[in-house]
Image (cartoon, rainbow, N blue to C red; front, side):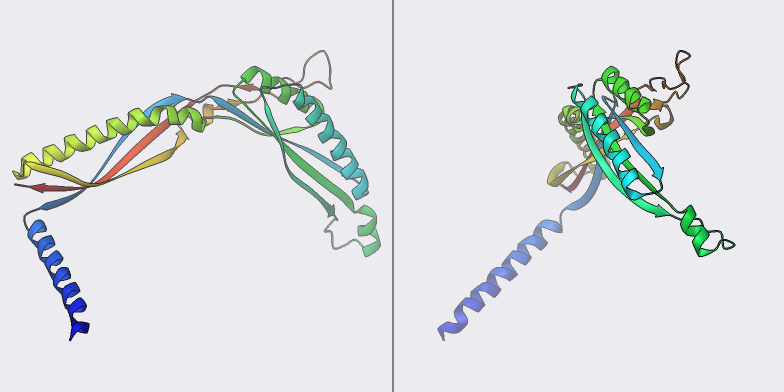
Length: 245
């Protein structure tokens, strides 16, 4: 006999909970609202990506050249404390001509090895990073990319205020709908925050490069030039709102 007591009690509790839930929601209007707040912020960090490339008859020649240049670049990077320096992908491959008219022997004679490795510079100090990047270009490195971005640290500085603003926007919208429906009681059942990764507003103006050489030396490369742009920091709020009388 006792073995039926717990299942019956559980069933009764479940039915009671469902009844209470029904009693609550039959007099409630449920809204799913979304609000956001955004602010345009000046980008604060500059990133440059360069690569060194070399072609030779043997893989050893290619690797030796790249290794020497990369060692020289890292040594130069250590003299600038405000710039973060890291190496990237390193690749060495055999390169053979694809002309079908060539014999196997001719193709083998014309086969070369090609290699490259990237290096990335990152800093909030524009003068230092541009000077270092120009120095690497003079060593034979090629510029792959130069652009400003908004750091996570600076983005986070704005998120608390934007979260407050987004909640106020949400409350104002909920109050307006409640008034239109004649349902004065407002209850925020759940609130979820979302943060959009900062997006550049003026991508084409973020960075400008100059590649002309100095008149004083044919081997020197002019220092690259960059101008910061703007990014939008966006906070979104999603909420389930219950309206009642």
